[in-house]
Image (cartoon, rainbow, N blue to C red; front, side, top):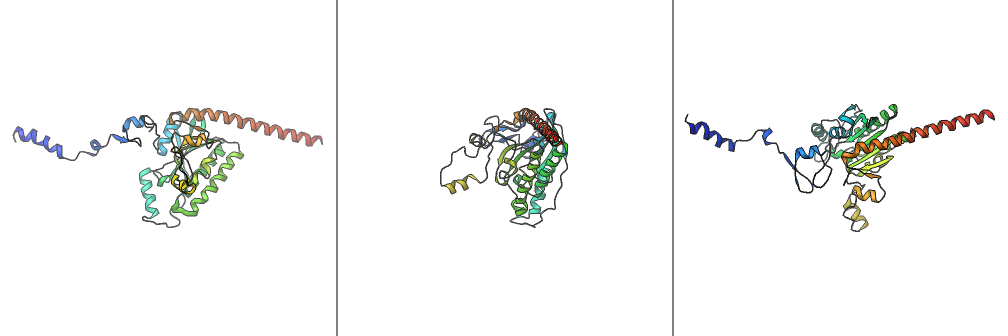
Length: 305
């Protein structure tokens, strides 16, 4: 073997060989603003575009790590109903869609529940993963949501939920629609106990979730430029037969029209919600004291009579 064979040929051959999966990995991604972004820069910026500020979708794991103090949290096991009770099938079996979604997300369904601290305040937090069939809300999501509420009530600590969903899961038909009323009743139990309930609306929050639990928070916060609405823009435009503003159904538009309370960047969610919880918890404590004193007064009056 001469030096040409030994050194030159292998180098030329390497130009045409398929690279290893590791070296082939794409280090860049694109945003809706059409700018090319270095993936590490996007991750270090909490998956917010450094060029246009768009907040990219997070997995439940990413959401918990970016929100909880010191990235410390404990996942709460939630009930898992029977898969595909209606044996639904369109161009693909629903059971197959579930298998694919579980493989991608590494979780049982779209909703995950965790317990941790926000500014040293114990909280229960729920989140949706849009990769799981568009974050659609079905029976398993309903069970997870209610389990989160129950843990919140049992421990007397605030409940915070990050919505990211296209609405109810059509493959479960009326079973999915039933979750709207079930979750509303669960939220009502939080309110009876004066337990703070905060909802953070991420992109997108649409359909049945906006017609139920997602818009019932004591405080409604949205991430910048998130799409928030019930029906789609084209459906509304065709119905009212008017040209809608370009910013229609954006977080900023909804806030300006009184639909939500705040629009907060992802990096400020932890300190902002921590401050709000301090206020809400003091208010709840004050209400509890007033109710207790009113009971004592009523008892005294009854004794006197």
